[in-house]
Length: 535
Image (cartoon, rainbow, N blue to C red; front, top):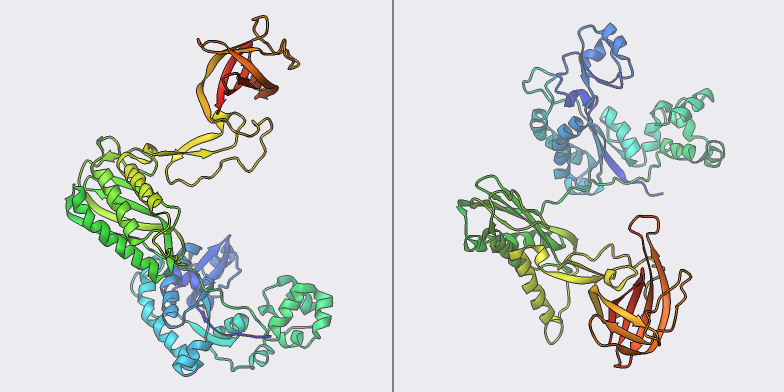
């Protein structure tokens, strides 16, 4: 089984270090009423992790007790983690004041593991003043000396963490011998440790000497894993932390910009900078967030999205169009801030700050252009024109029809702003009572009043059991002349929202007339309506 050489960095009692406590002062950090860390001075007076508050105060009446603050521990530890990353990349933070990193590559680069450890130690010493300034006010407030720090190297993160406690570099293939005399309590499994002690196994070496198959049969998967650690076989790799990439670019205006022409040059520069950052990280974007601050403290934000990767020119256009829309918008001093989806309000003062941030990130896989030009160039020009209109008049100024789920033809189409993702259409679920294909070519909003007559000239009706009172013979739409019916089908009953006061109960018909047209009609409460027409 492949085991990776690991370097572990460990600061003992990191919570009190992060709290700003000096080592010569008795200070302890409490979590849930128990001591979790104590300074060297407090330990000399008998204060140990695990003691209750009263017992710690009884052993050291003058002790200062600080509450545990995990966010403070992480904040103060961050400069030191960055220092380790500056020497060896791929650091994994395992807990307050402790991290591990693979050392094989660094050992080759620096000429050995000892040399790599020395480089990390120097980087930590240089970064300590920055970390100390972030610490809490538990100490005297003056700069503190370097805290105790252990660096250990061994096979796997478990053994490396133990080696860091004694600040040693375990030679390759010597991890099992290094762990053998150590107490079994180092295994992070209280129930298993208690059971092994009752069985007379008090060292890691004694536990490691047991046959692998017998351990698996007696202690199960958890015991097998602990047995592997005791034998120095720890195949875990360091999971390097993912640091968020800030792709935003900012510029300022002095004097403030109150015309679109002043922001045009800044738009191109910011777009090129943002595109260069994306390319450096192997990314592309499908949208861009534009944020502007005015001299009166107003904040305007708008997000532009596209159905494909944006080029530097496309980002430039969207920033320029948005500035044109803001600076030429309606003069409304009470409009406040403008966000995506709101109307456009002209700022009450010039722009002093402009920020552009790519959003909708995806890998930059590239795109092969056509042999005889860009495919869909005409559609691209149309999209650019519509997008610019939105920048000037707002996103709701340009709408496009999207098919959605529903029973009525009028409910099957929804208008959404151009460029928005078409989600939540309801087409992925069945709609009982939906009108069968083919769909009508013209939907009447509102529906047209109509009359359906039988051979005697009497109105045709539908009974409660959805039975016709007589076959339809003539159809009259509004004040128009009656038309002879040549064919019909129906009725199809539709009973919607029957449990509410606004319930709708009606029956649908399809009628063909002598003129060659066809209509979709509905009858409700004895009245006929033309809902749609067919060509």
